Image (cartoon, rainbow, N blue to C red):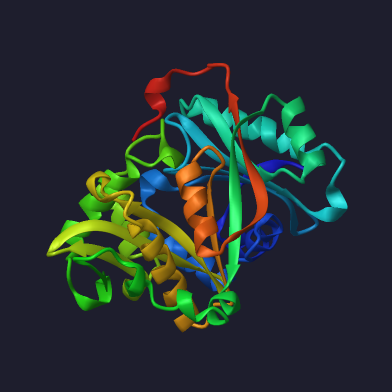
Length: 317
């Protein structure tokens, strides 16, 4: 079995394999729609191994705003019947070759801390744990059973109010720079490259999993003081971000935004809301606990530094 580059006709098989890695499966139609929006410079490197007309291994290298500069997010999926045959190791070796050839410095991956066998496999191949993230969940039924949590406006500090982007103010031209500044302050993204306005627009405004009524802005008078956003995650919702300007912190504004987002998810019929934060980000964890979220699992961020073998000038972008 040989390794080759992914082709468009592989799409259905590719989605089948990569869904082995996903908590929320991705449909073929959603995958194809996502492909249309993929910018050339951001297009991932994809490799496959096939047997008798079916894919048995899929490997991907992708840029991500959540990984260090010079690193690529790395995913390898192996069909259940072809594990322990060395195919994953072959794919990883080829992905490393492709990353070095493109001038990148390292690989990044994520695994739940319960995946001990996979973690041991990665560590033997040079990956090391860099950070720990706690994923927490809140069933919206819990909120429905607690009337005191159902109106985030009741907990807003005086002179503040919540609006959604569906209401037309503030405009995206004001909100996106505000989000960029708040993202630059969060411990969860410390040490990572700043997000571009194009990335922000693609994530918060035009992403098919985003909705304007799922983007909340906290206003102090007519000035932006905080913001939060949800994304659809299958039948559930995921809290993408909550941030408050420094001078307005300590007033409970972040908690009011988070509770407002949970309310929006409940109104949309989502059964559960998910959020994750670095374990070192104690203020964020306290906020989620106060809102009623409970820990679900811990995910580990892993990194592997690659030995240089090609000139970095070929990296591009």
